[in-house]
Amino acid sequence: MSKTYYDPADLKKFGSISEWDEELGSKFFEYYNSVFEEGALTAREKSLIALAVSHVVQCPYCIDAYTKDGLQRGIEKEEMMEAIHVGAAIKGGATLVHGVQMMNKYDKLSM
Amino acid sequence: MPTKSLLSRKNNLSDPEEQLKYLSNGIFGDGELPLFKDKIAGGGAYPLKPKKLEILQLNLGYMCNQVCSHCHVDAGPDRKEIMTRETMQLCLGVIKKSGAHTLDLTGGAPEMNPDFRWFVEEASKAGIKDFIVRSNLTIIVANKKYYDLPQFFKKHNVHVVSSLPFYKKEKTDRQRGSGVFDKSIEALKMLNAVGYGREGSGLKLDLVYNPAGAFLPANQQALERDFKSALKEDFDIDFNELFCITNLPISRFLEYLIASENYEDYMTGLVEAFNPAAVQNVMCTNTISVSWDGWLYDCDFNQMLGLKVESRVQHLKDFEPELLQDREIRVSQHCYGCTAGAGSSCQGSVT
Image (cartoon, rainbow over all chains, first blue to last red; front, side):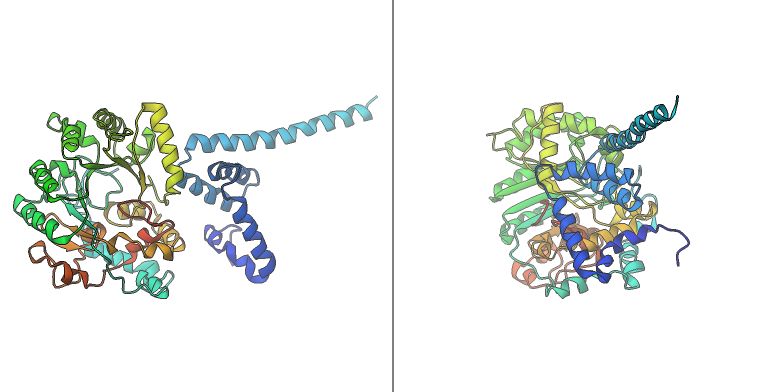
């Protein structure tokens, strides 16, 4: 067994998850591929969203995959970094907006 | 980035045999990835046979004013291999004999050949339908003796195909050298000024995109859309089509892949993106590539790997279209570069 939780070589084995559950695995990959097709959003826009989300969910496989995907689509590093900041802002905001809950609770419990 | 060719650096990858060894050993030697011939045999496409000859591609020499980090020719100012007028005369005979409708001049920088203009004048009389010159753009502004090239191209109704790896300065200069982007833009403006790429002029100007790194090109149409809007908006530059070309693991790009430890991932990516539909249209099935010294190859890449056509006819002086037609195309693992995704050729995607 590997001594680390993540191995970059595992990314290309992603498809093997279907081997233990063909039906659900296939459904997922079919859905996944449909999501990234050109639609109301361009494939380029979707790639940037995927890159930002990859960082928010802190998935190293997804970060590798969507950095490369962005390069292939001609997405520039400034665009990639801005996309990540959007993710970071939402994640930071999501933390801080709970501050209101803290304040509410604090006030309720305090005399 | 390199400032000299592999050859003048005495790098062992300047030897085609070494490159071929590299492409057959490692992940391909131990069976982790299938050999190209086995891969296409699965779809019944092996051996690969030529279709009708349509394109004659002539390499006028390996001398170039640039030393691009991805160059599969290993071209540069230090390369002295130049096609002579005598060989050019053989080419003129072959153009008529071959029945090819497209003549494609490449290099190095073909314009640096001292007999370039003489040859273009002579070849343009041969009744070729599409006469291409592959220009690296910066040559046009490199020296004042080249400033009138746009006029010269126009006079002979040459179809100009130019490399511009990206519509932004940073990536272009990283691949092709500092200052290349600004010079390329200046040259594109000069071409536009005489009508090239402008609507209704009939003068065709196409651009070639190839990725600035260890990744594959994306959809050609989407990139063309981005290139067109960026070049128009930033510089008022027009062009006709964008060709996406995949970098093949040969020569200086192979050197880069190995040095940056991207070789295995890149080759795996090419194999995973293998597209059987692209195999039907690979350029070696309708092209003959001619080296500066008159030898014949299935394509420009095989030329750089020293893989001459497998035929009794191997040189311009023996050119017999029918004999040459009856041959098997020589393949190795670099061929995965032309069959990945939408496919790749000197004319861009093939599917």
